[in-house]
Length: 347
Image 1 (cartoon, rainbow, N blue to C red):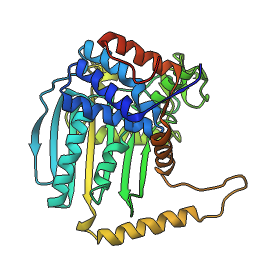
Image 2 (cartoon, rainbow, N blue to C red; image 1 turned 45 degrees about the vertical axis):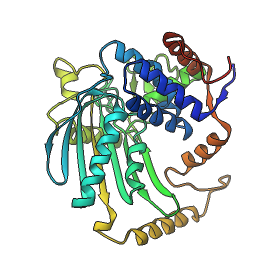
Image 3 (cartoon, one colour; image 1 turned 120 degrees about the vertical axis):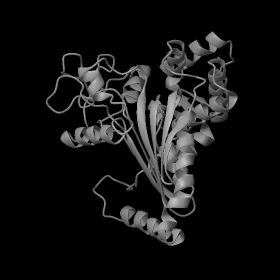
């Protein structure tokens, strides 16, 4: 069965309705839907609506809290610690970045740590929130282990993603969003939905052997070996340990972390505290042009900077809709039936 194209606005309205039925406030459901469909619009389907059904099951299992008590526990002029109370990740993380941006306007930098959040979606969403405010944005997250260090046959770290965005002119930006693994687990889920194999460099099976079957994949492999592993380990030190909520050690030697719980750091840097923002954006434009003007190897038509391919996909999908593979449609149909909602496409 082939993919079908679904209008992004209809898909977002449907997704928001699902989360309202799952217990979120209308405002929180709208945020959650926006972040997920934003990922689909940019071609990051691993972090889009294919996760909706899983989130609903997580609420039913008590792992995600649809009505959390989000509170500020510590604060300085430039920093903040937020207890998320197992809130949906996009709900608390958009709030955290708003706080980071506000602090950066006053102190030049805002650094916010989040404890006990849940899956946050595509981290570039939050970094780009800062870029739209003439700031550099950074966002990362840690979770219990799902990635094997080089030479290990079991997971020891999380494939902690990192997103950094900086503004250029006319909405242009350099926007890096990467996992510390070769591929995110969500890409394995998309491969399952499409009925496709994965490269044998992506994941290991339960015995610690490389696999091309996404259904047999149990642990991810780090990007660039020790480099991806090292970054992941450091991100745990900058988030989970910083908020007094160790996830890796608890999973490996202790009672284990509560399912679904993760910790995160969010930052915003006010460019105006260091240089003229107009001049900075001009320099970004020149840097992009310089990268794209490099000599190309045979067969390569164009060079891209981070975030540029996603922006092109975004324009195409805004115009022609979001492709949904059969497996993803099945997941959405299941949750639509559960809540008595009309699907955003013709059956």
